[in-house]
Length: 19
Image (cartoon, rainbow, N blue to C red; front, top):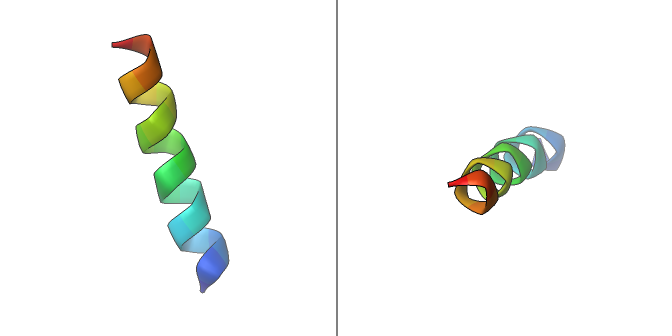
């Protein structure tokens, strides 16, 4: 369960970092 949350957070962080 935590794996999905971590994956989502990681993707969001990557997008925000690129923005």
